Length: 264
Length: 342
Image 1 (cartoon, rainbow over the protein chains, first blue to last red):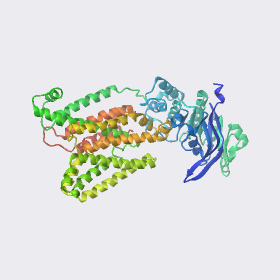
Image 2: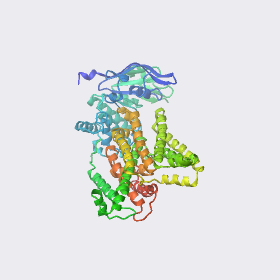
Image 3: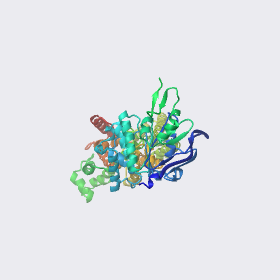
Image 4: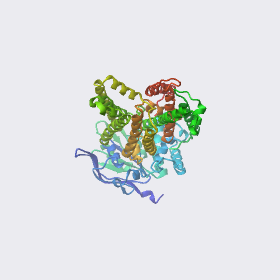
């Protein structure tokens, strides 16, 4: 694994993201150059409305880039079909699954869909991958429970297990810690850290938990009005990037503690 | 998805029940024929010619029709509930039944306008079947055309309901201008009927039904993926538009032909999937689809047996019986379990 450690899983080249509406382009961010390596846990932070979701939607091929290119595992995103993409990229969205009448095992096993036959039969290999995902996320004890019986924190772990079962190089999570209490926020992010290390997958998540992200991430992508910058948390702090994150009238970044303080 | 529990026992029970109900259904009727004679006449011939005739040309096609109608409506209800992620969806949400009603209304209520021999031609049974199929097909085509522009599944659902409202409004206008006799004929069509099909008609019905069933079966994996929601389904590599198209076509083939041949039969499509979910407590369509097939057929056979009021000369409208028998069952199931599973 050490040889592949430096393999780049997700790369963007002078990417411009935004919307096209009636032939008018709204640029949300431009000149986005990021490169994420195998086994890295990466946090994407930025103020509300800065374009985190737009960036994630562009990276997951939900919307096309205005300019520039995205490579996943050296393959140009626009050239790969949805089925191909589903084998290299899995997602955890903010939305809840449409049906909660599934058991945990059934829901996680849906992650194997890109690999199964026309009717979705699971092979022994599929089952062992599912069991492993249940084990890695520590939910095997309630694998036969229905999803409507679970708490928010448990359900989030199930959704992460489903993404793991999809067996991809890259997992992208959109705000995985919303609606969770402080303990579970830390728990989920710590879990992601462990998973990135153990499975050597690249895990990218967007979050508002900047202090937690600083403590746990290998790399962070910070979106401000002027730029999208990615580096290790320490370098970002010394560059003073976090001070530009929010308007300066309410809160300020304290470099010593790595967290924000309310201005009194 | 695997079924970690195998459902051998409930499936065996369902299959046996289906066979019993089927035999019970052909044993009951206005003419009382002993069960042993019924059984004999199925495999060999019996001495009593009129009994043989009744069983082979009246009761058997009717029982087969009941099986096709019940299973077909149940399956199309299941498809719609999963596609629209809405427990209230049924096979008729896309305006299929109102389209059929419109076609039939134009034929029956509009017949007076044409008058004379053309009217008699128009009122033959085949023209009603064709009008119903055409009506449902046209309404569905409009819904599909709109659905190509509108990507939101919920919007398609509402558009289907709107098409339903438009067609029923047109039916009201037509009814206003038609005679009491025509109105009566139209209302009788609306009661639904399983017993009017000859073997030839049943064969055509069966062929279209098989096509719809085949399309439902190849959609099983897509339906399971859709349980996560459309965005997740896309991320799992599912071609949403293609799957949605196949599912809608399957529903319209099933519900459209059933309405054309047996009239609009309420309730079965909405309720059967719920009954099955309460019994099987799974959301896996690999289990649900065959279970809904068996359950729908059983319920329809029972409803039909009740509707023909055994040993009496009367036959009650099947459309009323399905609701009268089935609705309390669903209410009871939901009150007992207190959860609308989906």
